[in-house]
Picture 1 (cartoon, rainbow, N blue to C red):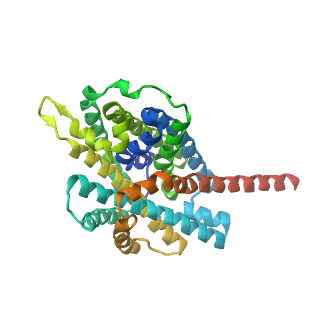
Picture 2 (cartoon, one colour):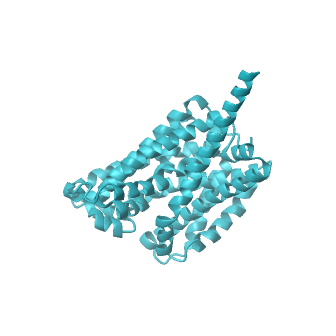
Picture 3 (cartoon, rainbow, N blue to C red):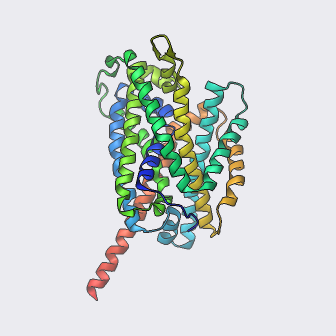
Length: 370
């Protein structure tokens, strides 16, 4: 194997949770509320159920393709030529997720924290940390997730409790005013953006040291991440209402600006920024790592770390070019990205599992005849 490190089940659970949260803390509330309005919390629960079912499907992947990453499984299932094409397209998916997430980092920092700062300078600093983490390996990334998680949970709880006085439950009413259709449309968005992107873990499941407990680790991580997203979106609606949540680019960040407890605990938006940067760092690192590892497996390289620096520099160049402005990026994100994620996050693993089950049934049939 190119990667010699191992993940524990606890580390797997934590990493799945952090990837599920990812950038969703800031960017998901406006997207889902745009469709479901005050019922976006229902969309989140529907998306969580759909996400858990999809994550369970990922866990079956281990038995269908033991000790194989997603790229290796594609090549085994589809053969050399078709498998190479599909592998390349899957790697492009990992790359686009990485570039898009880095663009979000750049836009957020220069618009909310450091106005006037050139995007490339922010991206260079960010990608250098990602490169270092990737070169250290999956085991170090898992331990990093263990260190970050208590901080993320504590920050989340502090911010949620501090904003309780400004919540008004009337903002969640009326329930299902326009029927179930807008709620279902909102659930598609949150399922794709939040609960299908953990498909990246199909690149790392062979490195989990307790293969028999993978299902438990994946489901627990997805559930915990889903609960945090549910609470984040619910708080956004309870504090801002559906209209402001939809129009605000970063509703969670601006909610943190409203916090004022006793006249001394206020202006704590840096805490939500820190929380978001930590979860996004883990997400970008794992997608970047999956791309590098997949390229190395596709081209039968003996070492993947040599690709980290040149690939990182390419990402820094691509991130500002992926969209001319945030409005364009948001339009693509809302209208087209969902289908892209569903293709690689749901249909591709489903087809691979279907082929494995068909071949297994065929072998059993042949054995019974003999």
